[in-house]
Length: 236
Image (tube, rainbow, N blue to C red):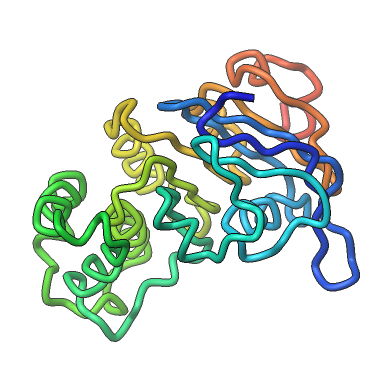
């Protein structure tokens, strides 16, 4: 395997309960990939395995050719992987500016903090207008923008976004997706999402999780037209 991220035959447990079986997935540089499935399918557990929050019982995870197995979460971040967590999890008592600064903690990102902040504010102008405002006073959509901006402050090669559309109005969701599309090919995106139609429209390839296993994968355009997918996930 030669992708930016290569996950091979990963088994994963939460406590004594196995939650993933034989999961293999690849992301190429500059690629946008969706991980789809219903609640409890194993999507967030997969992210936990990639980011070293959980340690796989079996399998290999390689990023830029380097094994992530046995790393600690902050080491994974320093290698170039950033996470936008489900539920946003901004530091509500800190200002917008302070939240963004928190995202630049990897050593490689600290020297370019101002440049990164300017880039984030270009992507999300509302964050520039709210610099001194406590993050907890932002709307849900603005907090999601801040969570994405905070992740981008680490200057990642791979951005993992967990449930981007959760709790957001459709218009806000579409606006954020347009901004992510504007990031270009300099950063790869792995999107974990329940909004299947939106995710397939945004991504180039997709993997479908069911009960802790990958049951389908392929080009997003092909999966969008698949009768079984349309019936099971799109209600068509």
